[in-house]
Image 1 (tube, helix red, strand yellow):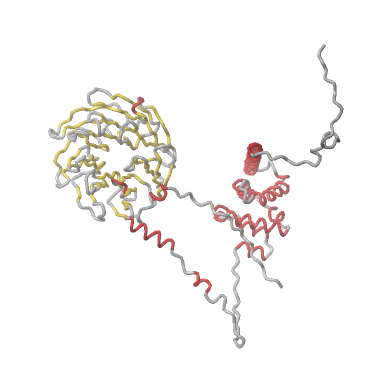
Image 2: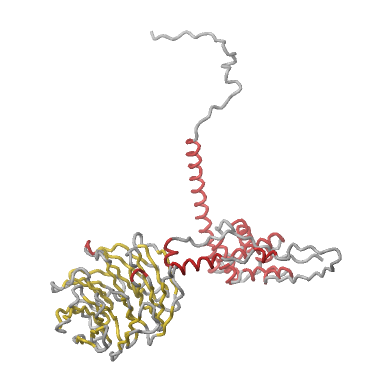
Length: 528
């Protein structure tokens, strides 16, 4: 009896991801260092001066980490409740933070006790920042107010109450000490000028605003709220330029690369997306283990620091040129060829006794069913979720084998609503793939032939059949358009080629006359 031959799965060319300069740049980071904090990490901020330490705000503490340290080099714990938004001043000497108890605290980075405590808000302060002149502080609170404070006198300078909901983000201009922008859960962004009594510009984001970012030129403003990231042109009165919707959950944090050419957004969907600021297309994506609350980039993009809801701080450091070179060499290393061919070409000598070892054949699940002639179960096995989604070529190969055996119609028949729905789903997803179309077109015809009598009895199956019909109609239209384009291209190529004279056997004879003969001349007609 002949042995069973397993189903042959054809190898199709892989359509691997396109390797771009952005891919190489953003993948050039080491494995992340993970540090457990005391609570959800709500804010991360890098010091503008070397060695670029960064402040991590989590629960009732602010930890300051060195560029490569896994233990905090400094800790501020003088908070009675949850701390928010620890921010460095531009000289790296002072740090300001808000708190759930409504008090704003100012710290000297070299000390432990608060230098100043600003009291005036009545609810939690989630927004803090320094103005460009270094002597004033911007704060925003859940009491719907944003305020400017004078550092030397610890006095309130201005208070604005124009928002109608919590103020959860804000940014002060680095070019003009009087300008600052706030974002609120009332869906609005407001631009304030300390020289005016009211806001000078208002924009509607359409969702509760979670984060704001000013470009270095301060002509463009980026806001994040809900699933949307929006870019606004401040020089044109707050005109919206771009609205991005690449995340599946709320976007919580924004930052800009050191070159200003890449925008990064972090979200509760556990992804960090990198956008090209020229066309705002996603050029790279980072995945994390938990929802992300805060994100920061070190100067020169040397580190990416992410704070998550599970209290984990993830730090990725850029590889040095030597490490990058070593990693690429290790990637290129493969076992020597002689390891694989060792003993393959050995031929036994005349006096050798040859012991043949039986090779055990391991069959896949669908091959085991095919061996037992259970064609319907073989097709069910090939239609399992992982196989049909990750390895559709296996499902197509099984359908092709069943068709070769002449048992495909038997395998397709006798299915309930759920089984038929799964089969139609696979057809809808792969029928127009040029690799699978010849095999699946035959299967689709057989399904329509077998289940013609039950059409109209199941709304689920009917919807999928309509989707299949719509898919085929669109594909036919595409093919017709492509044929038209192909015809146009053929005509263009034919007309652009140089025309060569085509020799003709009778070209030297005109009207049956030999060369050199002349026919009778016709008299020319003259006009009378």
